[in-house]
Length: 422
Image (cartoon, rainbow, N blue to C red):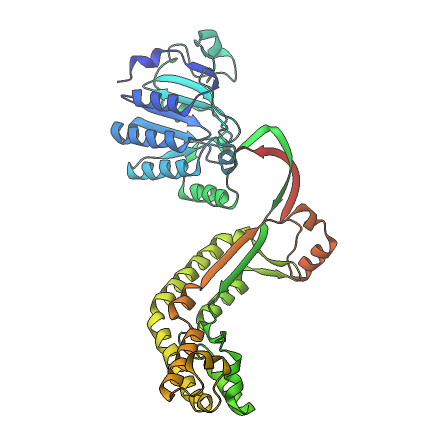
């Protein structure tokens, strides 16, 4: 049984209706809620879905535009569209979609509230906005374009099916909102996220679909790391062949060792090759369309680094100890015959073999360092930098980009726009 509110004339707000007032109206509902408009903010959509669950599937009807461009203006939220569709499926109901809607009509138990949607990313709603009450009259029903010609004065205020009251050509009639519609909006918003703007402040804007990316894996190539052994100890080798053999022994770990870090370096190179374009003399760039997948791969690499740092500690300690012991054994006979002069101050002119070996071992262990120190230094570095107008006007950059098969036409534009709000 429709509420007596259905007999009330519509309330028309001449300004934007703040979300908190829309939510207050929704909370008044006891029988039915009907909404038609470009979309809803997430906070309003949450309240609407809450009421939908409480009032029941057939008590709520929703028709929205569901367009990504409207979300970028702030008329609706992508997350709100997803929530509405999810709720409709849970309640075995339907959210309808109709393009071109630029005005909101909210029906609460038959009472109609008409208001303009707030472009929240451009300006704020104002609670002091005026409102008027528009009482429908019989003669208005006879004016084409204002009312359905089939609607007579006795029908005014009656609770007709909501979709029947939305007059539109067949090709623009409301249709069910689908998962494909929602995904298209979500994907569009991910590629071009909404931003808040101040229309009073105009700036020259450069919009690019690519940016520079500085991507590297630092300190991971343990097999390429040389141990900084004091040069006077190497000079004691006596002959070039022995010295070269000792230099080879001063590698931290072997290249084929499982803790060499080569797998991590290879993984970094694979990600680089797959997603980044190298522009000679300028750096590497990434397309925005590849950014999400690239970021996932980088996060996965960071997880691999964390696992490597944890799992390699014991093995690296053992490798350092083994390599250090081998070098001590190779150098000790030579050091005993040619004691470094700088040792004389602390060991005297004729130290025992035990003291010589102890001093040699201490110096080499200090040179090799602590295993945890090497592992803690390994990290993934990723910095994004935007392309500048000056660079795009640089003929050398344009030429280098073309050689790298980065075709600039169509992936950037320059235009006058409103400044983003802080």
